Length: 222
Image 1 (cartoon, helix red, strand yellow):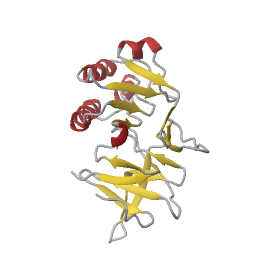
Image 2 (image 1 turned 90 degrees about the vertical axis):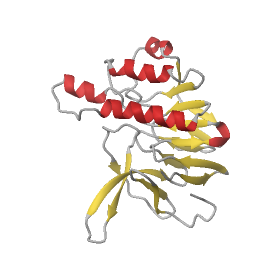
Image 3 (image 1 turned 60 degrees about the horizontal axis):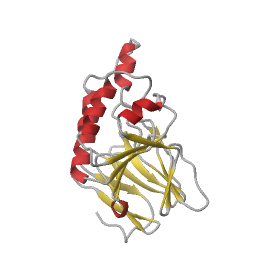
């Protein structure tokens, strides 16, 4: 697998193939929009949902935490899709495998579980996090002094093949004042962004983070 390193506000950030961002200086793994429990929520409502997607999300979460071994996992909102269902217990089992790592949720619009549910799972909650040059939020919220890192949008980019066929991939988006992370959850869909000159966009394939547009980035390495 090929991750990518990008420089933002003097900080090295590692864009992971696993749809998560790692900030080495703070030893913080940053994940947006897991939407755990969404497939089960849909099935309970009689709406078809792909089988196995919940376990795939949890397996990938376990794999990336084990691979990176951060000091903290910072979840940028929409951790759980809706009201409690059994998928929460499966997530807590994964969280308990990493007792030495802090888990903190930046609350999003889908995070409606009772506060005691998060407390019993040893998950802290914050409205936002200001750390170094960054302000971490769920909804994109550009700040006058810090560079905003957010989720919520589920960003995607449309790619055009040599035969003029098009396809859409999830992506990391870095604008002048804010970054938007790809949705970690596998049952979320994407919203195609329209980058402008100066924006940096990194598309995600199964095995590589691919720079697909942006200004010259000689100070970035793969």
